[in-house]
Every structure is written in C-alpha cells, then in structure tokens.
Image: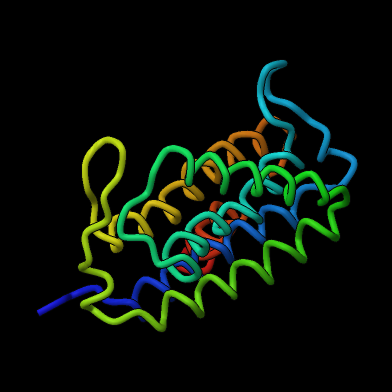
Length: 173
C-alpha cells in the first residue's frame, strides 16, 4: 500500500511551484539582476534555472523512459536545460515559464502508476526508484526557494509565507 502516490506528488509539486511563482512575482524586475554574492546566480538566473529544471526529469522519465541513466545522458539534458534557461530574459518570460513548465510536469507526474514510481533506475552512483528521482526535482526547487527567501529578506521584502502567517496571527489576536 502506498501512502504517497503520483497524484499526491503532483499536488505537492503544484504547491511548491505555486510558492516559487509567488516569490518570482513579489520580487521587482529591477531586482532580478541582484546577486547575494559575486559568484552566485542572480535572482533571474535562479528563477530561470527553476523554470526549466524539470526538463531533464521529463526527458528521463516520460520521453526516453530510461531504466539506466549515464553521466552523458544527464550532461546532455543539463546542457539543454542551460540553453532553455538562457532564453528567459525578462520577468514576464520567467514567470510564464514557471507556470507552464510547472503545470506540464505536474500533469505528467499524475499519469504515473505506482508500479512506474517503484521502478528502479540505474545511475552512475547506484540505483534509485523513479519516485525518489522525481521527488528530487521538488527537493531541488525547495533548496533554491530557500535561497530566494533569504534574498527577499536582503532586498527588504517579507516573504509571502511569513506575511500570511503574520496575518493569521493578527486575526487570532
């Protein structure tokens, strides 16, 4: 018995992506060039990266349906991710890509069976289930969103989840 299936994963992904989109909308476009430190991605680069990152997982699990992934496969997919990300040059294009690509990925997740989620995929450093690999896409987005929350604070923006919590506490008081 699975307690967390494809539909749950898709809904969880939608929630994570919805929050990422809210952060993208909350940060003014004139701050999209901001870098927290010289060697880090800019705000625009982080959002562009997130907008297109599901591509590699889509190629792996839905297009090529790989049972073994090589370093060359991943390198090819990430090269394509980089090319796609570099085309997103405005806030509007980035937000649009976050919305469209996020929903496309969620829809694909919903279509997986429990058996497909349980399939083992060979990787250069061992094996993982498709479930674990796909969950990793969400974990990756949450990692970068935590960076974006800190960047919001550095820019003087209170993150939307904090604002919502503060409003709920004020309403109870």
